[in-house]
Image 1 (cartoon, rainbow, N blue to C red):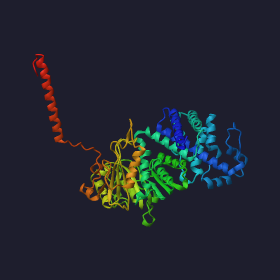
Image 2 (tube, rainbow, N blue to C red):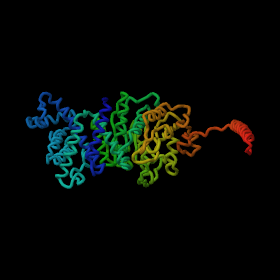
Image 3 (cartoon, rainbow, N blue to C red):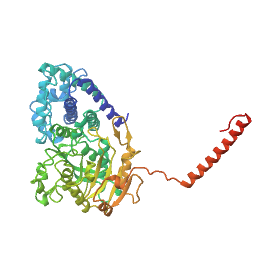
Image 4 (cartoon, rainbow, N blue to C red):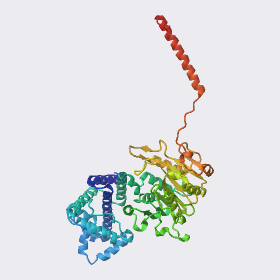
Length: 541
């Protein structure tokens, strides 16, 4: 079994456990419990592996049937060394977990149905939030309410439910490796499965992998010359509506897969639960706390201090900006906002749809050599009023590089068709590339969902990368700004690349000859028929 197959198998095992145990509990609530326990398992295994290396031969060796936690024994035997030991572990793995709060200790309490499990978990979560990590990890489990009546009506019922959940997780994954790749991808699989069952709420925290792949491939290509391939380094990457962080991790994966590096990852998320999921997701994929920063706040209000620097010399800029913000969100487009440095040069998006407000936010922080790719509803391409004015200026200034149209029904949260806009500050080409991937044959259909196959994704990315001079019938075309200007800066994709198949041309002369020939044959057959009728003494036709 390949590593990828193992990851998928673990994900499916965990999803089955989730379905078996959830019962009447709300899927989103159960998701948070399940993913938090999985995260604790990862932190614990990673920590214990490092502890074994650090202690070497001093690490306690237990009999197979001895279910105690080795580190707990070491702590009891060496109280005078524990403070220095924890300092050393903080230097090496950036965090510490006390033995009583390790997964091995917690799962043993679950196995024995110990009445202290719930209380120990609460203490463990608080310890990890406040003492294990640096301050950046405060509140990591803030939305995990172990006293919730959703788990049970009283302490005993909740404790029993938690024992069952944790024991099943422990038994279900004990045969699997728990390295960051395996457990991280299993975590991603679970997020995707929970999203599939969350309907409209899924859009708050999950971008389908197929779309995430397209955005990641695009922003990791060289900005000025995509044909030359992937960049070797991205200094800073931003997703200002990062959800569970999957899109940022996809960017990291794409550039590292090609031998490149990424210095630091930045994400912003308004929903507190999703913000915590994103931080866990980073750690589960082996991203150190020093390598990323996820901020809990409102992007449109721009309440993140690092993005509010008024001194142009100190302005933070990003080599890649990716985003899948909420579609057509109502927002506070007040007079005060019109003076905001992000919008001042372009104007405000209408109150009824913040799509261009999100776009301008990300674009403001894009570096001159960077690429931005954002998923938006089709309305941004053709709506009039304030949106037309913003779109016109972006086009005149040469910032819109590519428009990619996608099929409808790709998202769990909405069935509307969406587009990807690719923007650059120093665009080399003086035209706009249109890719219409919504036509028949460019995606696959299932009962409830459409999806892009690997070959569909590859075709989109290859077309963006190679930017063919000649138009590709019913798929792509480079369009001059002069033509777009004639259309009042309307970017409706079907104006430039229609997926409609032309009606076949009819050769009237050929059709007439065929009709004459048919008439001759009919007359001949009729005459022969009448001849037979005459011979039989019957009336002719």
